[in-house]
Amino acid sequence: MAERDGQSSKRKLFAVLEILKKYSDEEHPIKSFDIIDKLNSEYNLAAERKSIYRDVDVLREFGFDIMKRGREGFYLASRRFEVAEIRMLNDAILGASFITPARTKILSSKLTQELSIYQAKQIETQTYFDNRIKFSNEQILYIVDQIHSAIAEGKKVRFKYYRKKIIHNRVRRIYTREHCISPYALVWSDDKYYLVGNYDKYNNLSHYRIDRMENLSITDEPARSFEEVSKYEGVFDTGDYVTHTFRMYSGEETEIDLICSNSILEKIIDKFGDAAHYMNCGKDMFRVRTTGYMSEGLVDWLMMFSSQCYIKSPDELREMVTHRAAEIIEKQSDTQWLF
Image (cartoon, rainbow, N blue to C red):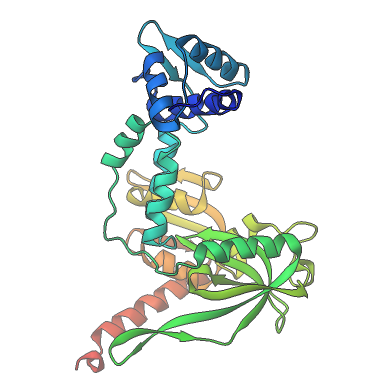
């Protein structure tokens, strides 16, 4: 039998809110009689029609945007997340390779619980778990939580780290030495999750992939200050580190002048941003002047567009790309690769 004691009235208020979250939206109002049925069947609570109106008024006073559409019923008009926001977050989770398949489904389910069952159904019918590459390290969530705590507490972390190697025609994990690192930041870049920190043996920064860590623990040893091993003072500038290390690569900063085909304009803008100096250069060409970091990484990136881009300056960068192209031609012409 449904409860009728005073305690149930407190539970009922929260239950009404949960019912509105789950079973209503702008396209699907829910009548008071249906709310009463849900209270009884799902929460073992009794209610009268007038009490539903009182509960809705209380919830409105607390800031919940509950609307009523004539005789059609009530609906929750706004939520913490809009449908489009849930969709974008859900797609980000699906596309994140460091989130395991099992954890992907759990997180996706949690996100859609923020919506009505009707809104969730729309997203679920447009979502599919395909065969994209996902890492299998189920410790990732725990590892991220531990690293976050270690950074907040100013403690070092210790973990096993592995790399991949082919042994007897199969990919195997090869564990390196145990790492003890002073952690400074967690960074998501190029679909990988990294820990940025310092290994005491060196006076610099290094980064480690989260998906390749195992058995991470927080030590009692105080972390080394990032001010001792980096240019940062007061606050570790994660954005600057990502820009220099992942996006533009490390190396000496220099002025870069490129003449490019219009076909790669979007790629160039994605790389150097809108703030670079762009100029029209003929019917199908444009010129861009910006700054970058001289490195093998920048050469690798430019090689992808070598037939659509001329390096006007610096000469050294053009020579590096030309030398790399010559190496590729030599490798592809070398019969020693045939067996």
